[in-house]
Length: 221
Length: 111
Image (cartoon, rainbow over all chains, first blue to last red; front, side, top):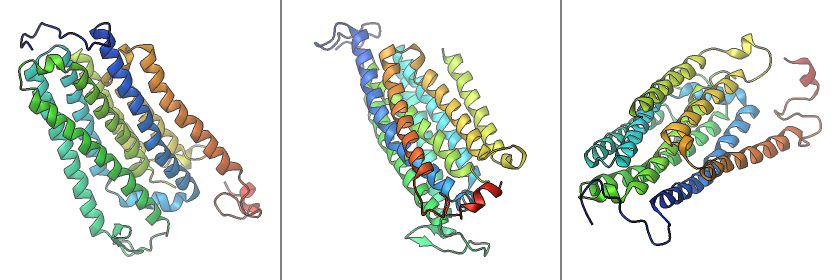
């Protein structure tokens, strides 16, 4: 293995050239992401159908969430996606230092996202909004909650926890690649892997782009 | 290239501000029809997702097969959604009740 930046490594034996190998890697990642679209999509559709069925309760539930924390989190995640796009670009130009720096920014913003999310869960515990753990039919301001607010909160926790789990997987991947990228020649050999990791991270961002308005922003029945 | 990525990032933040601002307007009060809040929020989310997919995920310069794979996932979701919603919209609820559990005679008169 050479550490010289300009040398392209040879493709794996089953590929004609590096371009075909890169296409195959991208295609494989998209096939996986298409299955993820159905996984998250079916849950969001269920949420929407229940919202149409109980508009009053679901709007009430959305109002009990902290929309500003959700908005800050969306901005943080968009920022981490931008940093990831820069890392992928740096990997294409084979500048290892810039790859590592941008991966670390991506990961830090991802961790900030999870920290804010955790704070939100804490506030929801305080407000008695967590079904089966700490839920009360009476809101902190003394008003009676509609019974389906609990159903809304179940959707909220299911979707945000699944999303957070996906982020943990992504953060693990980013961490592994950021550490390995310090080895000479690693970035040159692993362009496709960094690109696939980027696709996954952007997909997790897209999921949040849908979850944020569907959970926090539909405040009018 | 870095420059265009920055432009996309800035556009995404503007769309985020727009969708948050739109959430505080009760559109159903001013516009005819139902669920304008949902329609507007969904449209902005789709615009953001398209920007991320086309530029951050560089779908714009990927091969057509890759684009077909990406579209396939969304298309399947659309098919399942249409079938599910069609079922909920036309299913025979208790004959005297509509989808929301309201008496049917209310349907024509309310809204």
